Length: 113
Image 1: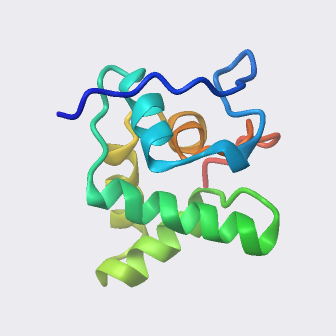
Image 2 (image 1 turned 135 degrees about the vertical axis):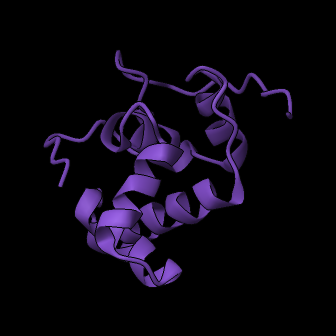
């Protein structure tokens, strides 16, 4: 496992980036390491890259349904199975852990799909 770098970034009281533009893959690894040593894989980064692209285009954080649909299409599986995989990738929850590691601001609505 790579040692996380201590990169100073401004965060809110819940640990989300105040400025999502500060995000980088190294910062994602740093944030993930705070979650019981979550080690990010290519699978994580596929989801994170989708989340960041979706946000860039739509100016809203994708909810679980959006991510599950993306994963289902990418992996040629059902949305139900994709959602199970998503929650294995981010065991502390997509909206809390996934969005934080992806460098999103704290979501206002916590729709879990």
